[in-house]
Figure 1 (cartoon, rainbow, N blue to C red):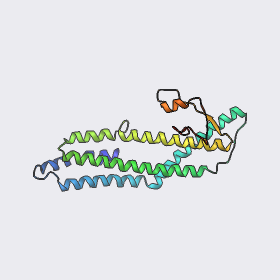
Figure 2: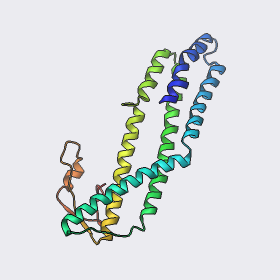
Figure 3: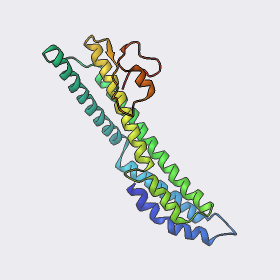
Figure 4: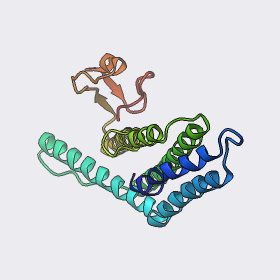
Length: 219
């Protein structure tokens, strides 16, 4: 958001002026086009310097560890209430699960960056070629990258929620299986966000090894 604001949106009035100077004889100004593409590459390069693949993977792994710790906390507390003592167990699978989680999410983060830059580049180039006012182009991009409610932010929230839920569900299944727990009762949150397919599962008993076909095991 900061890089696009400072290195792209701030330059849109200048690029627009350069494009307008070459209408109608030549609708495309090579100099302005080159500047735009260079600015896009500059943003991607700056991001890659601050968030190297190793740093992105480290951040993803940190989130994975937090999910794992919280998952273990809930499971141990639940078992202690039922059995009256702490449950301790080995976790040889944890390293593999967290490595898979961090690798997958590192690729999702990189993919988001590429998608966002392609969208911004398209908005600028297509906007100028179609004669859209530079104020409108800047407004559209600003809405897209808005740090609170922009498309990028909402997409990031969706990915984060989905990935955290999946990891939590996988760890729950693995840890319960290690304790000899083979079945579970599906419980929904009971609010308006519950999907119809999940509502159908509510209160029913399922086996980890034989999940409901329409939804799979819960996240």
